[in-house]
Length: 361
View (cartoon, rainbow, N blue to C red):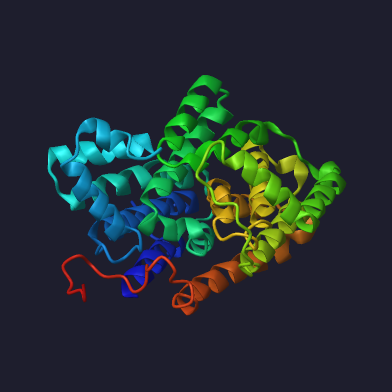
């Protein structure tokens, strides 16, 4: 587990240690960005140097890669709805035939826009890291190559949305869908970003969320009919008992409205808070189907960014509470990651092994 410990705690140390540059202390904002860059660099190294057993889907991807290598372009590209991913795989297979190169390219695509977004918008690297490693998005980077790339493209789509470049936004979402059809959920990003769901909307928000929770089975059955238009999504209801993240997202949602001074909320923070609400609403279907939460991954990825931004826009009366909760979350989520690793190993991400280490396979 030591590679994960280095990944998590080394950037936190860089974030908080008071280094000097030319005789003066390096500003906290500069340390924040340097620490975030270090985190993504370390994560990239772990992704490209891991064994193919670190990530439950990688062995299957390797088999597909070997098959595509000897397939015609037509058979390779149209073997599944993920045409963009198939083109990428066929291209790398033709260039070198090395699956390791394919993993490196996927790691670059999975991280580039995601890292750029975190570096640009996170205002507390330590808190963002602590929350990020506790979400499914982090684990998805090691296993679900197709959706990981689609999630990263979601951050590019976010940039286009905030700049009101609708045509490019639509094009990016369509490209993301060519890697994973569930990326159609990104289409909601554009109107969500501009929706001004301030505190005066709280009664309506609460009513909508309670309605979704109470009638989640009925709503889920109806939505799955629509999902079949875009994906091969299985809408079978099977109780999963996945309530932990639902409760956590609920607490985050309450926190995001109680703590901040609305007059300090900028467009980016308001938009990301709306993403948090949608992630919370989508998580209400997770107890019905283990795949339902995948629809929320695209918005879940923004939660580690928006929570620090909410804290930095706190009302004066909540100042001490916000600071206490900030450090409490850093400690709690960091410890929880390691304590729960064995129980949360569905994607075979623990323990980490480098590709040169011996394997039982």
